[in-house]
Every structure is written in structure tokens, then in C-alpha cells.
Image (cartoon, rainbow, N blue to C red; front, side):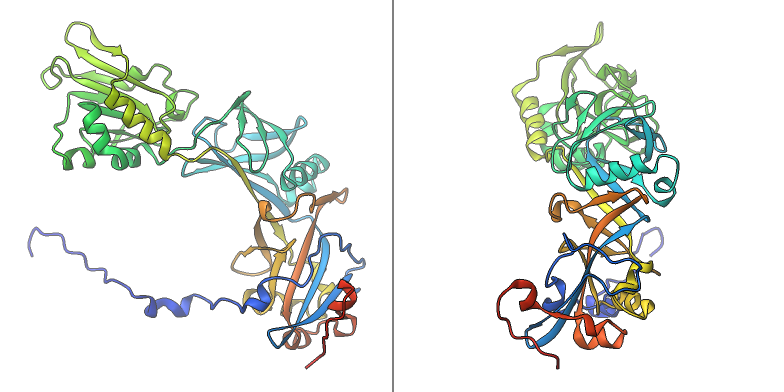
Length: 422
């Protein structure tokens, strides 16, 4: 109809797209018979892997091939859950005074740091890079400094320490999401609520959620550029909400007294609720700070209770598409294809991985799912990573696997478990 927006994109049912999603592998392939931790390695690579083990699972003959592979193509993605300013994107990260990575980007309430990669591992500071990656992967505390940014002590599974202060909470959402989540609480607390955020600062009276509750816009205008009503693009800094603002009232550019009556109540908070301030408008004095009212305290407490604790997590990134495949099979391309086809299931120290699409075998693994101390480094330099490939005996034979090197599981375990080839 003329003047009416009509959605033309149809609703898609799963049956229409299920062909795009590969089926889940059978349960007997998703966990290895043994892990590569402590397995050692073989060199030259064409020698069969140190352990090739067979067993029978769910009436299917299964093989696991393990090795501790030296991976020069490896690195670390560190996720730091905080709104605190760490450094500009692209800023250099140093470990033991040596460059080992970069500040990469920000995700929802988190900063992403990148360490390593083959170019850094094979560069002048390769040993420091390898030590940093191995330390993070093994969940040890590491001290990092960011150029023109923060001093960090990071340990996977624990809160980050930023410039000597332990981080408390990560945001529940951006400033706009916070306005949407807690609008009913905010409306009771004040006539206007501003949620400071370096990405999207919100102003409740102009925001969709405020308008939906019948709130009228106040005469307050913010210093940040407005993207859509009530949503403003902030800037990064070391102040409130990760912005440059040290005094919360600095976010206000102008006040129109005709739209902002005497006694207008203003609440300014961060997305974590860790800092908040309450003001009442006076035509003579402007906004005068007062203690938080019970309603304002309740709104801020609700934000705090909804936030998750700040913590550090990390993904180890490895490229296993190189010569280490020769220890698994005589036809390395077939192993690569089997991994992407989910006929060979790759794990790291027994932990599941995400294999990146496209060519080669490049994977991500959550280091918290791998036993502490499982990663080491060598002055190649490279990271020694425990790898396991698990597949059916039939598929292993088809890819040219070293079948003659298979050892029955009971020989490894030390107990009688019957295993035979089909």
C-alpha cells in the first residue's frame, strides 16, 4: 500500500537451509581415544606419529592419531571483558618489553587482543612471542603493556588487572541496550537518564524505549553526534563508560530551559552501573548533584546485578595444515579434506576445536578446555600443541594412514580391551 512499509523478505524454515549445515559427527568420533598431551613428536615428519591407537566404539573400529606438533603458524586471541580503555585499535602490545601483538578490536563489552602469528614468531622477538603465547595458553598470569595505553596483568579465567586495579563487571549491553533493558526502572528513577558508553551512549527521553513509555524529550542535548533518536556515537577514553568524560555532566552540550523545567531529575550511569550520579535541575544553578534516591539506587543496582563479572578468556589459534600431517597419513590432502568433511575429528588436548572454512587446517580452541601446562614452546620458534585426529579405521585406511603402526588401545591403557580390524 502507498506510504506503508511492507516486509518482503519471507520467513525461512530450517528445512529450507539444513543442506547448508553439515550433520553432526557421530559421538564415537568426537572424543579421542588418548590425547596428544605428553605424546612427544616424530621428526622427520614422514615418520608415523608417536601414537596411533585403535579401539572399538559402538561396534565401529576407531583410530586416534596423536602428536605434539610444533606450530609456527599460531597465535592467541585474548578476550578481556571490560569497558575500561586499554589502547587504540592497532596499538602495539609488549611482553617483557618486546612487541608481541596488537590491540585488534572490540566486541560486545570486551576488548580483543591478538598475540603472535607466524610473522611475529619468526621475527626478531620470536622467543618473547612464543613465551607469551605459551604462558597465556597455560593460564599463567602475564604482564603486558599497550603503547599509549594500559598496563595489564592477564590470567585466563580471572578478572583482568588494569593499571593496578582489578576490573569488576563487564557491561550488560551498550548504552542503547541498557536503556532498552531497564527503561521501566529508569522511568521511575528520573525524568531523564543518560547511559554513558564509548560506543553508543543513550538518552532515555529521546530513545525508542522512552518514547514507548510515554516519556517526553527534555531540552538536554549531548556532546556526542546522534545516530538515531536517543542513540549517540561516543568516543574512547579513560573516563566514565570508557569515554573521555571525567565529570558526568560534561556529556551535556546544552540545556533548553523551555523544555527542561525546574526540578527535572537526571540520572547518569555507566553500562555497568559501577558509577552513577543523580542531579536535579535549577534554572539558576543548572544541574545540582544530590544523593541517589531509592528509585535511582534501585535502577543502578538492577544494572549491576545483571552484569557478568569481568574475566579473561583466550582462544589459541593454530595452523595444522603443514608437514605434521605426514605423520598421520601418506596423503596429506585427504586428511585435510576429511577434517573439513567431519570424517576426521580434530581435537587439541581432548578439547573440541572450530576449524576455519576454506583450505588448510586452521583451528581455534578455548584454552580453558585444555589441561594446564599442555602447551610448550621451542626455539624454532614454535608452539608445541597436542593434536588428535580421530576417525574410523575404514576412513583411515582410505586416506593412506599408517595402519601398520596402529597399537591396540589395551596396550596403551594396560588392560585387556579387545580390538580387531573389520
